[in-house]
Image: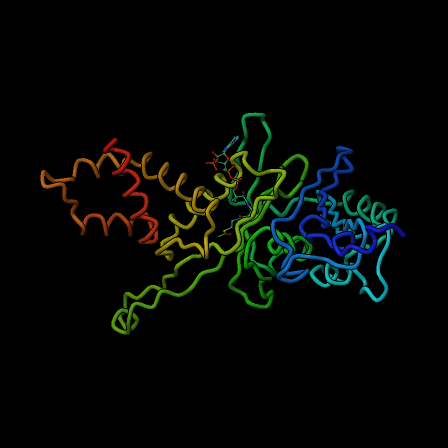
Length: 328
Ligand code: ACO
């Protein structure tokens, strides 16, 4: 025992620091480790763990199959501390985790990887090639549509808790969830996913009762995640554009909406919406329509907003940003 052992800080650690997330690629013989952004859904609002000295909790995934492995290491623990892995375990698919035995985990991963394949072609909704000639594929599937993707979702959904503030797990029994998946075509590694759903657009009984009535929906992006090792390389933008374009081209969709966007998602959305509006010639027409009194025809704006299926607040932000830029 040393005098340090009597100080509470020796036995206390922020849970964001203690938890180390790793993606391990056996094919490429490499591992990347990164910290979580949030651990309060697992370790409580204080995000602090007490009772262990030099605690490290490992949450490890195979980078292809995402088979999870968990372990904890520490130099000493106080009496009466609970099993430190229990809370983490409860957020993972309980019958599908390997705890502590790394050799078993490696063996399972090897077997799973040997038969692992990308989702079927009919679920594919997009593909792009980056400047380094890597090809990435986007798939869309309802939760129960593809058993392999359902399993992958159960393994990966903990990333939503760890990286998206206020995220909760989605109810697998609710049929309206659709998930977009992004994969590296060659390595078969999943880079991220987007959970989405739609809600019915009720426009009043007159429209509903009319013979020409077509059921229309608002689509909503709920959880948008690119895993940390793949962030800042344009993948989020490609995925957002793919989702937006597929909804814009769908006559049953009236509006593209986003649930509680954070600052970095707002940036990504602004950048891509502005780019799309610019390339489509919207801003050139906007400048032409501004009268000598500096007024913009609000009916025309409203018509354009509906055409682009953007939310009112988002469309106005884009218009405002462009007008400010044009005054510089
Ligand atoms: N090389 C280098 N940088 C690039 C490249 C490239 N080829 N292409 C784009 N970038 C830059 C962009 O300019 C942008 O920079 P900026 O932010 O300074 O403008 C930055 O990279 C990010 O753009 P992308 O790479 O397209 O976005 P990314 O793939 O990193 O995804 C996201 C962004 C989704 C926010 C991701 O960082 C993430 O998942 N974060 C954690 C979870 C999160 O916050 N999700 C959103 C929550 S809100 C919600 O879910 C509705």
